[in-house]
Length: 111
Length: 116
Picture 1: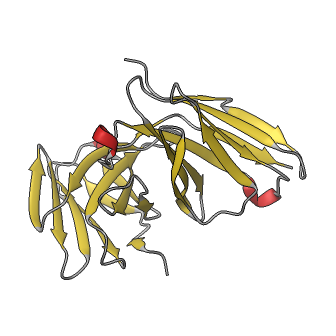
Picture 2 (picture 1 turned 45 degrees about the vertical axis):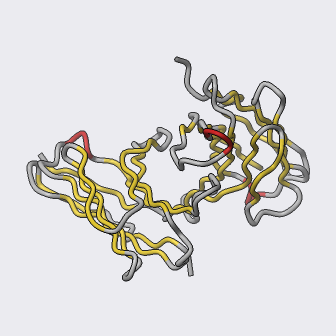
């Protein structure tokens, strides 16, 4: 069992709608959680991180963390075609840069 | 500000050979990590270096090794290549303030290795 699990998709969402991406993790020692976006043929780039239970908003993006359920999600509001990419969920423990990544969810925004 | 630079971008090797990949981090970044990306396994952590010392290591065989130089540049080496080593090898740098971690990794474009 992978330590970080994601639905591989593909997830298709109409333009302007809310895209919801989900991730679960098995290591209860995980402290920090990250969402990276990877366009086809490109390298991953960080879009959000969250440490505390609850919601964290940044523009059109909202990350949600529930440590009791070991669940992390990313909501993208007003989805744009430029949001079409693979979204990678990652976790680590405080004090080291070793990130454990999920296999990613491929998101397609339909114009 | 220049990003993370990896060389070579593409290379083809045959089984049994060895390969060395190079990574130049963003200026001022002291931590360098290496990841292997394959379609089936996704991104898997290889190792992380900070101040020329390996701080963390993933679950890869000893054929995979790395090092970091005093200028924070890093190299990774894979010896006795196997077909399954074909992958995109990504280097990432991070600021690692005061030797800590942020999880904010800046990735290079990767070195795509094909083993025949």
